[in-house]
Length: 579
Image 1 (cartoon, one colour):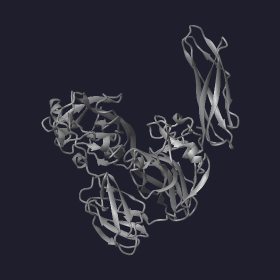
Image 2 (cartoon, one colour; image 1 turned 135 degrees about the vertical axis):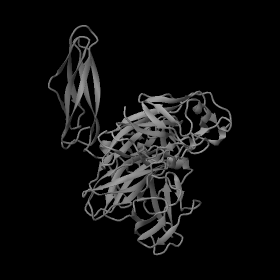
Image 3 (spheres, rainbow, N blue to C red; image 1 turned 30 degrees about the vertical axis):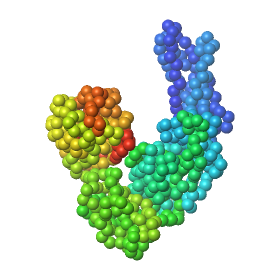
Image 4 (cartoon, rainbow, N blue to C red; image 1 turned 90 degrees about the horizontal axis):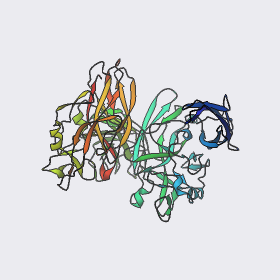
């Protein structure tokens, strides 16, 4: 990636499989009109016998170089005259821009549907269908008062950002009141927390939610108050016949408020999503207020069960009438139609006060949404439920069953669970002390048939560990595929560090960063008959700064559900120690 007017250095290398030194000639050409040039300190690479060598190449972009992807072609000429070519993909994009963060190719040509894979299953948006509505690379259109620029990427190249905590620069005008997004979810609907950053160092957090890009094959309605500015009659599909699949396909618009008295400088996208993936195609701002009730903040922003919380904003209506507050926490919902009732304590046009339910999950990111008496829906400020240090408070998945009652647990969402009997033969009984990967863990205290593990969904948990600890350990596994995500270690001095946790499928065997803490020769089934399949609980560790004291950890944000076989990361136990 090269910024307009900037440069970046790559290495071009050669490996010599002969017993004689060789010289390789190098010439590099840029595509016409790309605005790119390449230079190197030499036009040859001297490669020793049975060795390898590299040549640094500096790629520069003119200040006026067109944004987007292009190729450089390196031609390598061997001593005997034979040639090889290497194509180098180059992205010209401003640092911090959404274009620089693109990581998914979601748009394909109708005659080359395999060049993109939006949903990781072979389907993508049609470039031709988008173009018919004016959505071409670099085009700008106004949606609900916000100007959006479509990604400057040709079909087959990355054109959207799968939200993984990227920080995106926002060039917002003075008095900006709205921050809006064009995007959709795959395997949605899905949501995650976005963080607005202001020039004075302050920040605000809101939930960004997108509906599934096909509304689940037409079986669902739009979620989160999404608008539907792009509606296509088909999508491209590499596994379908014909390859244009007749299913309504959408790109949605979602918006959150901005404090007009501050200067918005950037936004951090959600670090993962509640389920599936959130895809962002474009970000825009407006000095106009949202065309809906505005929930600007929740106070206090961290609250325990039973606490009164006030939602501040405007446009809620002078009285409640048939209005309500929908409160959501870690996959559970209160207040809406058919949901558990939520206690409303007071209601005015600018403030609504409610009481946090008694059954919330500690340390989890929660959302509050005001629905007025006329049915208008506000945005959703983020708040956190006060964390605790007791892992049992976080258990939200029943993962074990006794062999004589196999139907009482559904660990993976499709009917299988870990045998408590087989675990016990390995010494893993509720509350037992076990050793794995050099650390001592207290195995889950949850009883078979009851919640006994944590679905990693961005919860924060207090950790009581010894001073000087240099290692954090987890007993974990994943269901319906492997998972990975960022874990955050929060220290008592207010600083934090991060690490990547990679968790293997429970039937896949330990990965490179894992050891098998427990191995079971079979798993249980809701059918009542065990399946002869080896399954595991893994141990993995990440480093901790031993000069500081750990206060809490924030789990990766993978998924808060296994429903329907959704891929999820499960945490069974946590330990701090020294290795």
